Image (cartoon, rainbow, N blue to C red; front, side, top):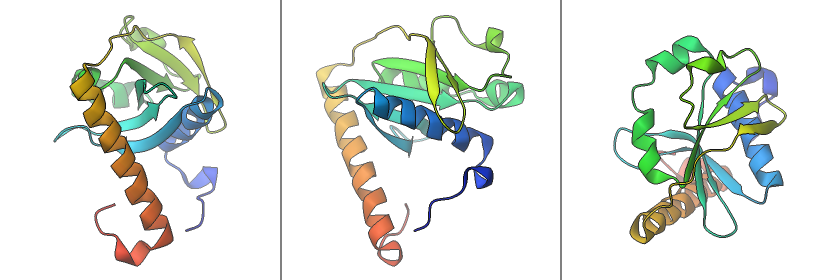
Length: 151
């Protein structure tokens, strides 16, 4: 499956790509569009070497942020929660008690660290299993696109 050129990605996808690169440099692995519960889909979920879980919501503009009514539901699925935005985003709209990442299609930088809210062990196990299954299904879909449905 060919890699999409940066110019063909939607604005949020470009931000997610930069965020994923940043987390990889920090020793994390990432998946995109992970569904932690019915009705929720996080843009980027990062898993650290010690099992730490980060969730990132990518916002391409004011309207995208204002339309998001579900972001608080993501808090219970991460040790830390961040917003990823580009340099033109009005960051004063974002809650001050959440993390802030400045991103583009090539990389990202954490501008404000997210407060830590450690997951309960059972929730962490659930998230790690979801992460592993999601990543494995994505890999299978790359190797055998005709053999996987729903990915």
